[in-house]
Image 1: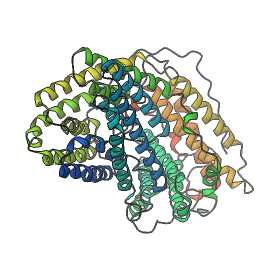
Image 2: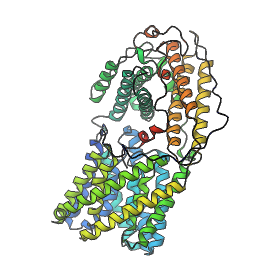
Image 3: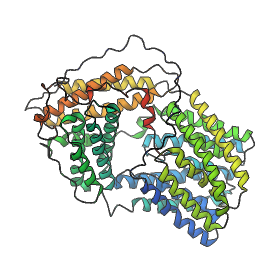
Image 4: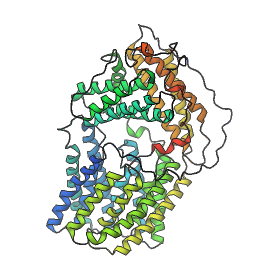
Length: 595
């Protein structure tokens, strides 16, 4: 198979100069998410009935509590329905729990200093829990907005149970909305994830493994394949036949990545297109697709899943940033005499991403989006002021617009989120437009400046260590794969498990390298070694594909190289490239599309 080529570490790692934060491209508008319409329509369906019922009852002031539960419909749209049911239930409980803590605190004290401190701690806990559970967008921001705003709602202790019950009822309705498509398309999320993997693999195959942008396309494709596997691993046992059919297609995407010269991008895209509908899952045409290709998947399913709390290390700096930044932002807002410090607190909480570079980009996007959104609110306020029904309809419109636009760029979504947040403050009663606009602008600027300053002060100095750990993991997995026998007596389960383990380690290495490349005042990550390790790993994957006879088309005969080891011909796979984008410039591509 492949020999494990050692890569000695440099004798001395140079200390990096402070990195320049990007300005170009931060506000560039991209393509929307493939399922943008699902959270957009779901949140409207979840918010509308409770709000309209309260309008009919003349109690729109209670909509601030039902809105908390309704916003849970934004979550978990990329998960299979069995896993989505659990995830949504967890989001509802987390939302209601944060709301309950905030309302109890508001009923016990009116001291803004204490309330801001509680809000900052809640924000840090919410950030850590959302990242640990990998709940996905919109992450902790919605939870933090609801809990921090509730801290400043006048409340008595006797009112808390009723208000929490309203949020819980609305959350139950949001759960039903999120699960509603299950009877119609029970395998929709898995099919979409598999289609994304096939399309990403086809985009990489189009580069030939060496063309322009091949390194970026390769990283994106491996990430899409890994996301598809994670989705399929969450699929329930009742859909075993469909799951296995989808797993075969993901394997074909993996094989295309390992041996792009033997893959047909048109065929990959055609299979992806078939998955978009509700028809039969397309079959694969490769050898041994019914058996050996899926043995590694079965082996992975047998491995117990690590509990989320067993991997908190990388989140410690982010938790400290969140608590410190949110607290200081709220106190700065209080010092300036702003009556709604929770806006500054929420702004700071929304900034924190995987590294400083991404946090900077989010800061620029947040400020631009909020300032434009304030102008939109000024234009819409007279219409919303016509009555409770007009106010609710405007909120529904901005809820939909936020989800429709936020996938193109965060600042576009903020243009709708900002007037929505301002309109929600009018549920209990009319608020002067000028005062709302002034407070929002001041809190946005304060939250962005103080929050980003806290991110600069609290650096993730272990990011470089995680790159070294990921490099070691790839080397060990590659050496293990190279040591497996490749003859006809080879254990197919061991081969497939080793191949999938190496692919997963390469994905982790790229994520760790991208995160470290965007940190501030860190040792320069060993980028050259990262690139060389990635190249060697991808060559080993290509060699394993050949030895297993899994190459797209008719097996190993489709490879036009002259040998079976890595690097012996033009078709040695992704590792042939120069590594192009495997440096700090890729940091912005890891950013979540939503808050």
